[in-house]
Length: 348
Ligand SMILES: C[S@@+](CC[C@H](N)C(=O)[O-])C[C@H]1O[C@@H](n2cnc3c(N)ncnc32)[C@H](O)[C@@H]1O
Ligand code: SF4
Image (cartoon, rainbow, N blue to C red; front, side, top):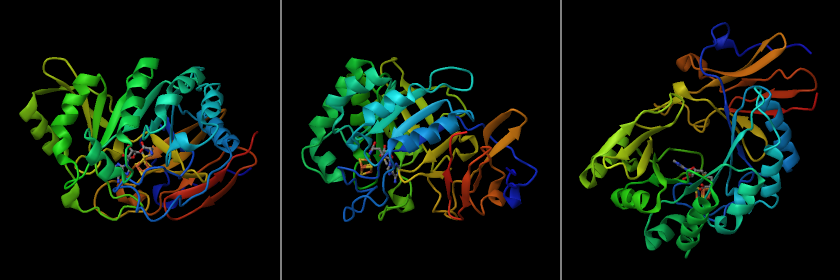
């Protein structure tokens, strides 16, 4: 098969990072309606694929350098068969023959009963999203009554079964939960979890984003500093979170700041959407907002060896977030212009 030509504006100067992290959304359905994520009026906007299809794509991408896989959604624990899917993923090996690092991001509502089976199937770590440590506020944000206790139970059981370190993600939104910063600092220390604050991003379904609603990294640090001093922990270049420990060594927090401190140039991720599209970037549909840069991802082919590589030559690359795949035989590809590309890899 003829290798497709690289996207025009980037031809000849690929540079960037190796793509090593894969995120797979296994459903767009969700049992919560978080105010920053869902309108609350619609259900799933995209369909699901059979697990065998995600697995086939994961196998191909693992052969191109993926080392970490994170299962996400929608709410991934709603999907029947997720434990078996983890078990199958755990059979894949990286190009250097190592186990994949498999993690999952969940709202935690169903986690307490599933943590042990997931661990037994090969899941290594879990991230639980929780935007308030106060049950009433939690219900206001998720728009579901009485979820808080389930999520807390899920976090605790995950720690007990060794899905370690348990990370708790909190999206901060002005007017909803910015007063939860210090309570989350206390929570990290008391529960022995890593709390990570995420700056609110303008993603596909949001209806409420404006620059004023973003609680920035600097503000989080300033507020947390009023509680206890923080000391920054060195972090890997590709890590999205800046990490901090409290000065007495008890408790860790992280801050993911895609809005005030974009990290696109260090991005090592690629995503499969629940309906089987490959995306390079969450910002895919929001080019031109003024922060965040699109990445193009290409497969660099050298004889006998292929790898995924991002390219971030700035806005000259941002005309389309396109992906060129050259898996060898039996590849159907369609270059879309909106940050997504349908790729249906077939077995060699
Ligand atoms: C889309 S959810 C999917 C997994 C699962 N339902 C959950 O909530 O963890 C993945 C993560 O994205 C975060 N998220 C969703 N919309 C966001 C936004 N507009 N800005 C920042 N983070 C967002 C959520 O808080 C969650 O931590
Ligand atoms: S953030 Fe997660 S739990 Fe909340 S509505 Fe979105 S997908 Fe559902």
